[in-house]
Image (spheres, rainbow, N blue to C red):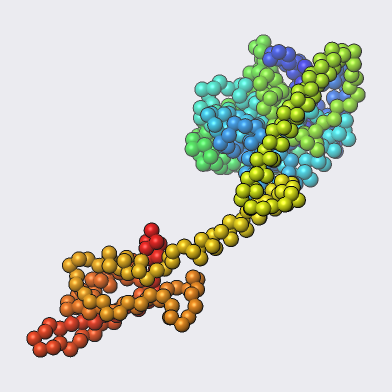
Length: 545
């Protein structure tokens, strides 16, 4: 299969063509098409694809990180349908726009037990649709539109060994007008961030420093030997102000990496045309204290061990990652926005019905057996349903008593009506049970609870006990039961002990009233204590039990 990765840069269009078959691949070709001022990279890419000897069977392009958002989710399921539903549910609260306005796709990165690690990419329909129309108008109809971070994820997984990914690795892809920072950890894409800074900013700074025009400064940047006599230290010391932006961003990304990975960045891989400046890796390492090296993309990917030019290695890294995303097992994981309403429609495919004759006959036989089996099952289930209906009619007759045939038919056809009738009948029986059952607020039950609560070492005389409404008022179960209790004791502390026992347990009452009664000659003093309040609900429940 012929796969083409297409990188639409601001200053050049990069194309990497790969032949893939049975899990093996070979880099067939790579090319760079410069974009002159005023030219559209998309139009140039369309013309380049049309001029190819053979059109690609699969075309892969990337949507820039500045136009989308990505995140990694941990979901407690392995079921793919459940994962799709969970992704949409998780994104509803996190996205700053409605889920109906979004175009998204996800990839299952790993599954351990019943937990799945999922990578999700999302963009707006109003952002994605114009990009797709723009490509199609130039004659480019890609099969896969993924993210540039996913392309770098595929490339890093191919270039670095597993043990080299145990700590986070960052790729800084320096383009003409922008730079993409990508954090990679243990095979997972952790973060992709794009800033509006690139090789053009370095060239402009060099032009200001040397007092030359932009074209001359670009020539000096690409070939520093031209100024070796006047500036033997090279270009780097002349563009320090411009490089301050990337140094500051690298330090910021290192802090972000510690926050999301809980690990510092292990090393920085630089790629893109802006990474060709002599001495740039050494300067970055000295400024950030992060090991830095250039990313040799094509040379590291080549199965035959071919060493490509450094320029090709650095400039083709993104295009190579896009093409490799459809090679081997990666083709089943790739994040692709061309789904649903934006899926690619294959036209002009011819169907050879002669080749389909045998499969169609087999399908017809299978369908005949299936429908025959369904007819038999329908008859068996029909008889079972008739038996169940008869049992249900008998049960309804036993519950409702006499019930007409029309009512039975209504109940069988409308479970909701049957449910409402059952609820009404049960409610009526509950009310009858209340009318003929024991009184839950019985004064005798309350008095029993009261006597069981008073310790045996306290001796008192009960002078007055009243519970419930007045004799001339009607019974209302919704009203609280009023309570009055008067005792006489010889020990004034006995009333306090009784109050501490029965008030929290049996009564909703305030402080009782106590008065001293006059004592007869030769008799001890006596004390009269009265409680008034409401009987607690717990009292009735304890008495009924």
